[in-house]
Length: 336
Image 1 (spheres, rainbow, N blue to C red):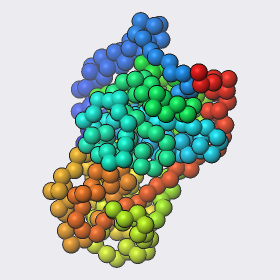
Image 2 (cartoon, rainbow, N blue to C red):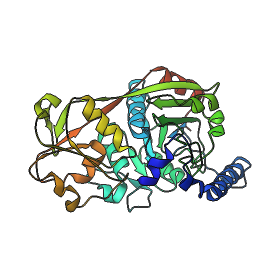
Image 3 (cartoon, rainbow, N blue to C red):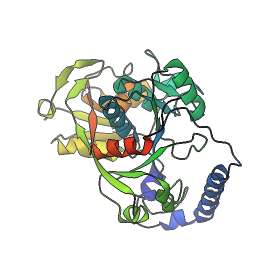
């Protein structure tokens, strides 16, 4: 977590400058890999339905999963039948595998489990997203569009629409991994179809994506619900003044903590690495207090939290024009 925090400072710190040679090698390897796919030297696979990829250029969370949920729901409202594929990061299964009722985050990953619980559409995982997409379509022939969660660099899967997501940290110091957060250079944005900003717009990102459609996304908190009992609700006012502990093992824990603070709550913050595999000892700090967590953490902590625990859901808000753009881009591509 320390290294990731340094990535998102405005300049390259002297300690990170020592990693500049490795960053150059990483950037060169990433560019070569993409070139090989573009020229056909490495094979890519096209599914018989349109594919919309939601991803980012930076390592860590930027808001892809809430956006994927929003896209799935809005596409359903527009009469489409989407399915979702994901790598299943953090899970033990290599896939292809359906995220079925009773699946655990340890098996399929926390984000796919959250997507399956909330989207209302079929979700499949697989390290090979093309194979996962084919398996999904074989099991659900009514699906007429595939959403790929976090697959911008998974070039084996051919895509019809690419959406790049950035949070308020933008491109950080602008350096490639491991000196900075970039998986690919900002110039890559010239090839995407849309850029979604989950928070403040980074000027360098806006400049690199000149001519590309830009959209703003806001994450709106809902009512807290009790872990294990979603029908039991409470508000921030109900929790105010109580001994609160906030847990977040997401790409940017500070975003969750700021949301709680904006709701007027005072709490002790407990950040964990993204996709952290929790054990009972990780939650021992909450004894005698009230535990607050994200939905992504909740799918992993349902059987671990023993005291009073509340989950804060968030919903993405994006202009419907993004759905209009997607439908325009895929117009004419019919499921075969």
